[in-house]
Amino acid sequence: MRDISHKTNTLRTAVAKATIKANAKTLSLIRRNKLPKGDPLAVAKVAAIQAAKNTGQIIPYCHPIPVDFVDCKFELRENSITVTTEVKAIYKTGVEMEALTAATVAALTIYDMAKAVDEEMTIIGVSLVTKRGGKSDFKKPAGLKLKAAVLVMSDSVSAGRKEDVSGKLIVDRLKQEGIAVADYRVIPDNAGQIRQTLLEFSDRKKLDLVLTTGGSGLGPRDFSPEATAESLEREIPGITETLRAYGQQRMPFSMLSRGKAGVRGNTIIVNLPGSRKAVEESLDVLFPALFHSFTMLRGGGH
Image (cartoon, rainbow, N blue to C red):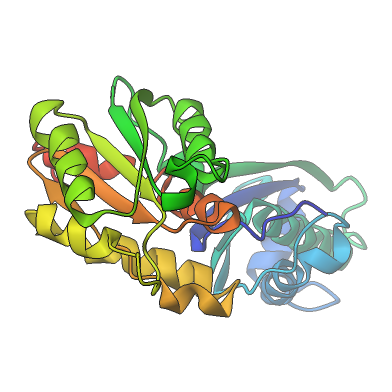
């Protein structure tokens, strides 16, 4: 089973359909509720709901999903029945398999209840109509070009006593996201130098994004939140709230992070923690959703 523990919950929806070919006499019996086994549509709807909720037990590599909504509708034509299913869930992975399984089981249920009167009945197709939610819906807008800086704040790294891991990890991730890294710098945990560097990146270099790492905890030399707050013109509290909430589900010490995030001019500045794992998790939260902020800053609205 694929590891989805790093993903964030989003609203996932999927619509699927299945088509059953049957003769006109069979359709007439269904419309008049005259089949020997009873009303197949009512039973098929219940079967579809049950199938969606139990897809993880039927399909080996599907994750068990806390399904929030399942619907099943039928369209009866002269020689066919179309089954349309819709599934919704707020979770880390999509629900297309749940919708497809629901449509398939609904079609099989109708087939089972009507086969005694129609030996030529056929299920002629099952297909996914739409799916929404997840990274594909929040990807980087086409043509969006961004320049960023990575600022590592650490006395030990700047003095050469330790090797930087987190900053280089951020650089690599930014490049993977198609963001040009215009500057990568390591400085000591000095509040004045932090402010001076942030102002350089935003006011003089006019960079789009500055990601910092280190100095956001409760240590005697952890000055980055205060220095960042003094540099910001507008805070974006939702970013740091989300980073801490995501981290807290994985590590109880995340609540101790004091990082800030906000805007100076047209530059977004975000404090990330110092540890490699915390940085990895924070980047999983930031991207691709953070791209939308640059659209807003440039007047594109929501």
